[in-house]
Length: 154
Length: 154
Image 1 (cartoon, rainbow over the protein chains, first blue to last red):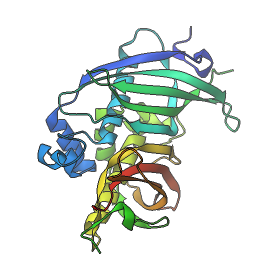
Image 2: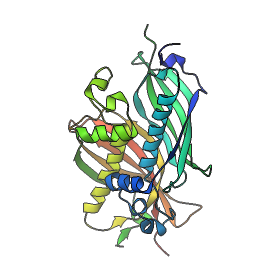
Image 3: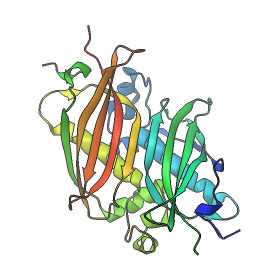
């Protein structure tokens, strides 16, 4: 095994579990004030009249937390780490249920497709299916990140 | 005109310009520490060995800033505001160029498709094409948010 996980070391079906992480009310409001100040992300009162019901996190906050949890999962896992070079983008991002203050989130990421970059052979492109659940086993998020990884040096 | 913009008031081709907003070094590092602590989002040194070159914002930070700018653009525009009920998700999110400290971002959002929800006739679903540029007129982000809007009360 190499010290890092190169593109060649990744196989369709490989994955990681991440979380749990509990999201707090102050956190939800602070993120929303900074980036997404819509009423349902700022207070229970603002959410009451909507399908959210009570204060719910910005979808961008939930998504950023999935990133935080995935990186933490790799950090704490023994053995080599993937040689990630940044993401190209994300397909099919869906916020499937509201995330409320006090919810505990966890998720999985699994490789579904991989190919070498034609224009940049030092990189490979990996698509993964990410799914995130709350403590009631309800899906709150799904997405397909497209991330570049270093290929093994010749 | 109604006091709010209902689903029925929105037409394909309608849109809004948003920004400008300049992103600072401390901001980039603070967001990355909290949500996306990869080396190229934390320091110039960590970015030097990668295609980012110098410190670059987390893609999730850039995306959250597009949300911030869009909401601010609606806030400061005279006239009614859209009755947004939250987003279902986002298709085809792409980070097209790195965003560096000091970059000034701006963008556009334009309606590309709309349909009434079959299961919830009090809601309509609107897809928009969002594009964001830096001060060099390079595209840094594109995405297709899918957002629910209230239909006009009967």
